[in-house]
Length: 134
Image (cartoon, one colour):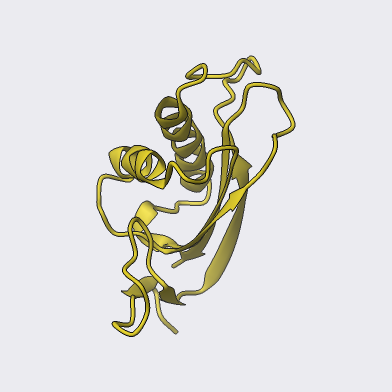
């Protein structure tokens, strides 16, 4: 039985280039954590970042980081990411915010979904991840 989780990211040459994600993530580990969608909400339920998509992306990623630390997870163990946003065409802004927090340009398999709104007025983005743990 493996004591370390591993992740391999693939983007077949036959598919379109991947700006900020990989087409495929293959994971091997002992446990899987499904982290609920995180937003730019502070502990007092205020929206962090105002109407700045990058600032909200960074805040949502920081909240994901807190949740992952609770299960001893890391960005290198994330195999799937789903992003819900009111501004799906702004993927470069979103990617920049993600890379700022995760500290790398390696990205798991990902889907960005355009939405009309989130549960709390003012939120622009929600991000959920799947993490394979050792």
